[in-house]
Image (cartoon, rainbow, N blue to C red; front, side, top):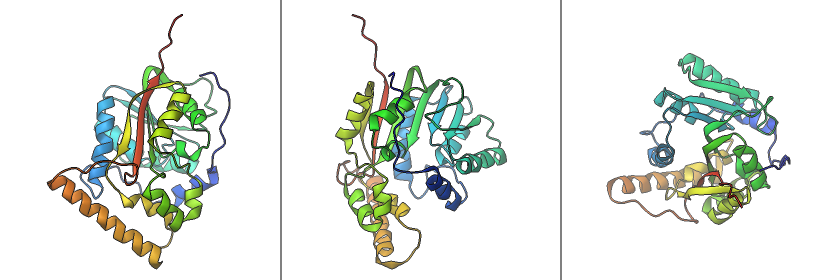
Length: 269
């Protein structure tokens, strides 16, 4: 992984600053809340990786509900937020100070231009970051530079290759255009191209139309009404899954794709 290239993103710093500024007050992840089904499936993956007594970095962690939750749930570990948006970092810093999360640290810098030398972490993860770069392997190489020798990289992205991508294109083409619509095959290939060894991967959850909330700035019109109806459909599906049986994940309806990977072993010749 000697590439020094810096991939160009489909988004800008001003875009993320504005996004953090308009978000509601930070609330940590709630495994028993309205999106419990989705949250618990993501949490299961993180638990399989292991989070106790680890150094954990979230790239793009400004305003991260996951970091706030994990830092409280795993006091034996050290968590770090890395984000180039001062607004995002400060929102999480404020929450951590108010809630005495002393095992949560902050780095306000570009992931491609870290201060001095790279620090290494046991776990590096990102939620909805790498799909904003056309050069997938390039941004994954940048993520992997923060890994310890036996560290694990977990990347989770929205499944824009399925029905959610189509609806995003209909509801808000601008939002659709800042995403690269990877399916699982393409996402796995990006990790392989970055010389990473895949530990596990797959589609996450049977459905979650709530992901489409980012398409709307105003709560009005037929598009908003359609979104609200579909969100209720997802909640009805989750009730069925919790009480009867889980539905299969799929390229068409699953809201997320994930890959857990590590450095590829060096084979001596």
